[in-house]
Amino acid sequence: MTRFALLATSFLLGAAPAFAVSDSVKAPLANLVAAMRDELKAGAAPEANGRPREDSERKYALNALLENSTDERLALGLQGASRSFTSQPVLDAVEKLRGAIEADQAAREAAVVKAHQALIQKVRDAVAAAKVPADLDPVLTLLDLPNADNNSEVAQSRNQQLNDARRFVTRWQDYLAAVQEQSPEKVLVTLQNLNQEDGNRLSIVPRSTLLKIEQDQTAKQPDFGAWIVGIKSLDDIAAVSEKVRRLNRDSSPSGNEAQLDALESLTVIDKIYRAYLAGAPFTLEIDSHYSTSQLSSEVFARIAELKVMLLRQVLPRYIEAPAGTVPKADETPVDFLNRVTAEARNSGDPRLALRARDAKRALVHSYGSGDDPYAIQGYLAAQNQEAAGQFSLAVASYQQALKSGSDLISPEVIGKRLEAIKSAHPEEYQRGLDAFLKPAVIMSPPTGPPASANEEAKPKGKPAGPGR
Image (cartoon, rainbow, N blue to C red; front, side):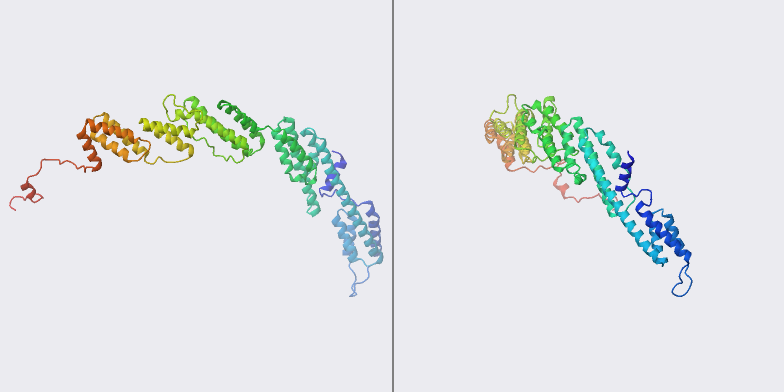
């Protein structure tokens, strides 16, 4: 780094270089020192009360001027000269020196401002010329010089500007690194960060230029929506999901919300499909926990179509439908389940009807099965009892299933079974009907033979002992 660059940066950071009296101050200072010495030689005029004037304070002021090692010592000497010396030559010399110092300070401040502006311009030029991150290392070295301990508002303002410039340059290095890496997603992210960067208040790069670069880069971004709309089959989902996942990972630390929504929906569909292909158990929870509000209408529609495609394939196995029972070409998943439920009801297969209805409830987010399980349990019990020849119990169970009101069990089927039992076993049919209409109170049988009337009349308790 050149000596000028170091000196200029030290100025603009608010640091004063090693103190030295400037040429414009040397002559007025020498004149004041000479006038003070002349007054000391001539002797001091007595004070107002007639007492001799002490020379110690005047000598202290003179020594401070002779040292002039710091601005503070020079100011102290000036103050002492104006207060302790009385001759007109000294007082005139004090005013001339004060004016010279003020002019010198103004020149110093102008030099600081000029150096500050020169460094900021140097930053602008370096950023504009940089092709790779390393091109900005020299200007960062200038900006990384420690700030001086100067609490003036002007110095603090300059320090803040340099901190802003330093942050902007490091962000620009990130941008150049992304360009060098040929990562369009990272390039866009770094540009977005730059447009939000406070450091560009210095207009190191015009904001309009940054916006134009960002717009051009946005136009080059991969269209993840087109990837999803282009999915042809369930087998394509995994590859497209991985592409969206990589794109989202490079987009920003927190990810792109629309990409996350789409990725979650695709992942849920693909997991169910992979489990289906592997013959593993799966659920029908095909709705992701993410919102889909950020998805375009085309992407939303395609994901919905993929869900339908998945359900048409997996539902027959999920509900354990008979072989060959598949959705028709014009059936939605819900229509298919309604059809299977109705067919199972009419054919007397309540288990299948219940599975199909539960699957429908899972799809439409309706919970609970009402009395259906109890009705089916009663119906199946009746079938078992009838097969075991327990016709009266079968009649009671059929009647109980019929009473439940479940539409999963066909009243016609139950009616036919009851009619068959009545025709073949009329007495057992009647006992079963009576048991259903007037349930018997079941009592525990006695543990011993019935007691006689005399025994029942005897008082209870232990028999009396002898002699009582």
